[in-house]
Image (cartoon, rainbow, N blue to C red; front, side, top):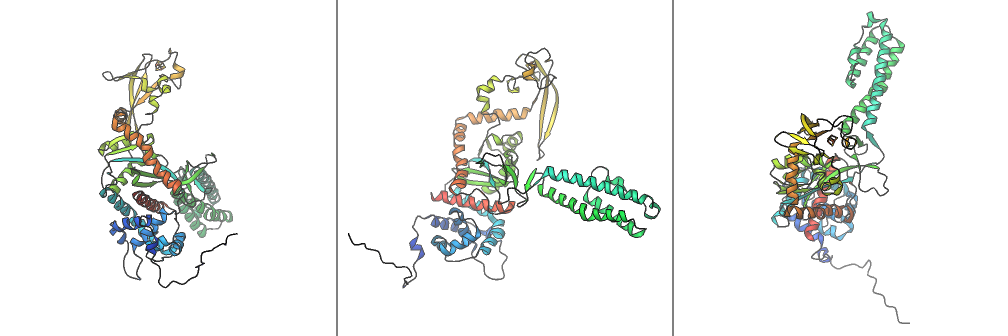
Amino acid sequence: MAKVVFKKDKSNQLLLLPPDIGSLIPDNHLVRVVDKVINELKLSPLFETYKGGGASSYSPRMMLKVITYGYIDKIYTNRRIEKALKENIYFMWISGMSTPDFTTIHNFRSKRLKEAVDDVFGSVVELLIRSGYVKAENIFVDGTKIEANANRYSYIWKKNVERHESMIKDKVKNLLLHIDQLQQEEDAEYGSHNLEELEGHITTDQVDKLVEEINQKLSKGSKSKQAGSAVTKLKKEYIPKLNKYDQQKDMLNGRNRCSKTDTDATFFRMKEDHLNTGQLKPGYNVQIATEDQFILGYGIYQKAADTSVLIPFIEKVKTQLGGVPKNIIADAGYGSEENYDYIKDNNIGNYIKYNNFDYEKTNDHKKKIFLSDHFEYDNSKDQYKCPTGQILDFIGTKKNISERGYISKRRSYKSRCCDQCSYKSSCCKGKNSRTIEISPKLIKFKNKVKRNLESEIGKILRSKRGVDVESVFGQIKHNNQFRRFYTRGLKNVSTEWGIMSIAHNIKKMAN
Ligand code: SF4
């Protein structure tokens, strides 16, 4: 048997000179790209978050490099970054052997970076444009839901709050009426309080005022024991409950459901539903705008519908990009009259599909001849003609006002008579003759969008959309395994996604 030879065990061997960590890091390593890119960024807004005075602070540029490299290396929490700074040579090299602890990292992230992350991201985008990585011309927009760092099973549900509140308000009303009855015999002494105020909507302030009023009267005159205990019940049980419901309604802020552990998070149906249970989870609606798989804009929203967040998102992208993009490409989830009008007002090329753009090309659509799309319009008479030749006359205009106050006018047309029509059951919903509602403005927008999407450039942009923006979400969610936020609250989550976007762009530059 040949002799086994082992290499010498050099553990615990003392070195004459400390090793140069830089010599251990390959020239093309990602950490060097992070260092180089962040050295080139204009970080004055970040520096301005420091007020001065007191002990010296770690360099914000170094802190930004460390956190960004952490997000590239899938190290997201402050404690794990603190650990990496002591154990990982890449972190040691990029921090220059500085070892800020997790509280310092947390404070930097939640106080300094929170204020300046949009500016830092804007500086990265500016560098991308300046260096020729992107032109910021064709912007692909899409959104995804990312789970919040919140308990999945503890939430505030609007319907429950309203139900419980109404029950308590009924009890309050009854109790006050009961007190009033008790006091009627002693009206001369007490005077009666004004329960008429309680008609209709009761507010917590009203109840508070009445309890105070009753209390004062009780202390003046002969005490009714029963009235006294009723007032105590009101004060100790019902008023705190009403206050709680008021707070919960503030937290809901118009949403149907929000999380108790991260009140800014909304309950959504998520794509990642492996058990197919349809369970709602607390999360945020993350919107990004990309070009050549670089993130050029991001925004975090609490509403689920992409249609309703497009305008605030594009407004944000404009500041992040420092201008208006030439074209916007997005799927049908974003197509609405309000959004189309906004895009037109901003002179942006519109490549946003409308909801039935793809469906229009199907046989099913062609077969459904009773869809209003198949009714013929006579411009000179302002009439529609149904597939059987019946005339639909203009009967009035309806106004729809969106959450943002956009007014969309829908013109209604009613068929002269459908009674004898053998297709009535397929064409009309009720017993009445068929009525259709049309927005001429939306039809104009749709025709324009259709021409854009079916042009040569439109076809190229459409085929690129899925590859461009969706693969960015794929890289972040699957390659980086970032499927849940690590911080709580809208502002913190937005900062976190900002760091993730900076990290993604630098990684992409390195590639
Ligand atoms: S039901 Fe009325 S609108 Fe519909 S196809 Fe018949 S006549 Fe035309």
